[in-house]
Amino acid sequence: MIDDVLIQWSPETLRAVLADDLEQAELMVVSNREPYAHEWVNDRVELQMPASGLVSALDPVMRAFAGTWIAYGGGSADREAVDSSDCLGVPPHDPHYRLRRVWLTKQQHDGHYSGLSNEGLWPLCHIAFARPTFRASDWDAYREVNRRFAAVVAEEAETANPVVLVQDYHFSLLPGMIRDLMPAATILTFWHIPWPNAEQFGVCPWHKQILDGLLGSSIVGFHTGLHCSNFLDCVDRFVECRIDRQAGTIHREGHTTSVNAYPISIPWPAQAEHLSRSTARELVGRRYDIPDRIKLIAGVERLDYTKGIIERLRAVETLLESRPEWIGRIVMAQVASPSRSNLPAYQRLRRECTELVDCINARYGRGAYRPVLWLERHHSRAAVDELLAAADICVVSSLHDGMNLVAKEFVAARHEDEGVLILSPFTGASQELVDALLVNPYDTVDMAEAMHRALTMPPEEQAERMRSMREVVRSNNVYRWAGRMLLDAVQARRRNGHASNGQAQNGTSVWGS
Ligand code: ADQ
Image 1 (tube, rainbow, N blue to C red):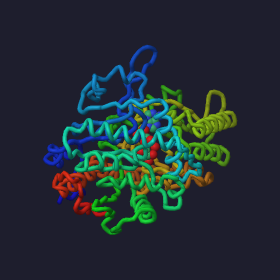
Image 2: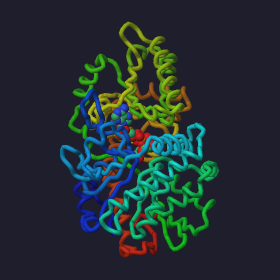
Image 3: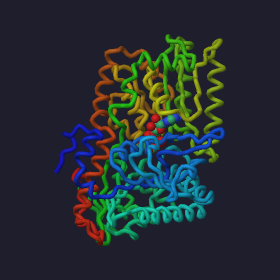
Image 4: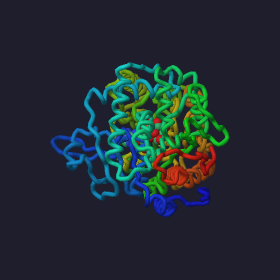
């Protein structure tokens, strides 16, 4: 048995540790979001990588192992870039793996992605006090799209027993459907968002079908032990089966599903490792016209109501109100990538944010100075890294978040051990990054005070906190996340003896539960 703690996880060790087992296995990833999209921009085709935690985490893993990634082809120029089998090698300039694009009709995409996934399951799983909407027509589209992806997995698979990594809440029915088509497949499903408690989950009209679908997996992974425990509670409440809580296994009709926590992370060393704080600050200062003497506070996210953007803007407002000495001396640079902008809840959020930004800037702006810089667009990886490297403070104020990779990206960008992370305790990341300033985003006064504390924190304290957080992210990097899951998948596959009947004999994880 391999002790993952003793390994310095990198793409090389990931490949080396799994080489023998995965060389014989076919690796497939299924997600809604594609890792590379082709978009028409002014009569030119442009390649884009979406602002998505899932893609940020899985692309380096797929680059380490060749395989096939199956995803919805949502880019406006996606059809221009594929071969006759709807495939292309990616990254296009240096192909390491295959991307198979799946086309959906507008009606399928609206019902599956916008409807059931983002108006139903997303608010259902996040405690952000947004009421989920469940429409029967969305459920029909959701099932149809899951069925379509199951057919594509079977079509793309070259062997009867591939290792299939199913990603996220868009595909809760897929594991069961793949299991029906390919009984010998090893299916590892990773749920990137929180899993709610049984009361909350039970309000979904299709809660039983969703659990049934997920239990087709060999392994179901979450970010935290709490989400695993909520999931086991739901299965216990709604499904007839035998649960071994200690081992984290569910036994049903001769099939075993293991439930494990795999906290996701980012590549290490970070891509921004070469960037010094002063160079980054100079670049960012020049780009946005922010003089050097001004302290820079950064926020980076998709424009989503779970991320607590309104709450953090209110905290900036409160800080400037209660401590006017900061007027003219701080800028909050908020990067907000447009997300799900066809949905009313997201349109409302956008309106509220921009109104609040205008209001703060009108009240506390002086001459050319504006305390909030609202950057509402997708940024390149390099631009995000630059901002994180340049900032004095990063605020992650999610109301609820499975993990939150931005918190880890900020820590990774601080190779000079300075800077302060303000972090919501309602993120998975807060369980690992305990040396951040942990603040409840609903407590505006406390968050404003945390900003003041961060702005005035002595360099020695910053360094001490940052060093310990950097050590956590260095050792728990994304290669370890993938390595742990794949080692468990390999073990489950071995237990099956690559069996054609696909019945796992014993789902105990090498990692425990
Ligand atoms: P997300 O909700 O998308 O992920 P997060 O984990 O913060 O949230 O990842 C977002 C990624 O997109 C980060 O890599 C970030 O740098 C990038 N990004 C954000 N805004 C951007 C912008 N404007 N331009 C460019 N890039 C931007 C979901 C869950 C999380 C979980 C991840 C991974 O909601 O809880 O951490 O999946 O499992």
